[in-house]
Image (cartoon, rainbow, N blue to C red):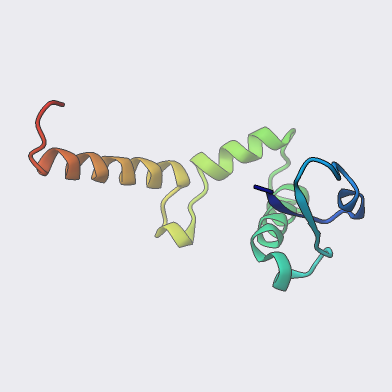
Length: 103
């Protein structure tokens, strides 16, 4: 079974030709082809590279901020960490309240 992946590099068309991977060329700034990747690139550009209010010394500091401190409107004002704990907690509560013994 071959794996399909997208890339912004023409060199990926020729990389690993015998591995069974199918590489698809997508052009930069083409959100109709690869909208999720383009959205992540925009967020990184706006908040990491072009942010004049906070200068990050490395990408790991920004990733920590993004996942543990920055609120996300899509997550109803929660951080990704809070959303993860909320979903895990609700799953555990459903499991316990379902009356399944042997925990």
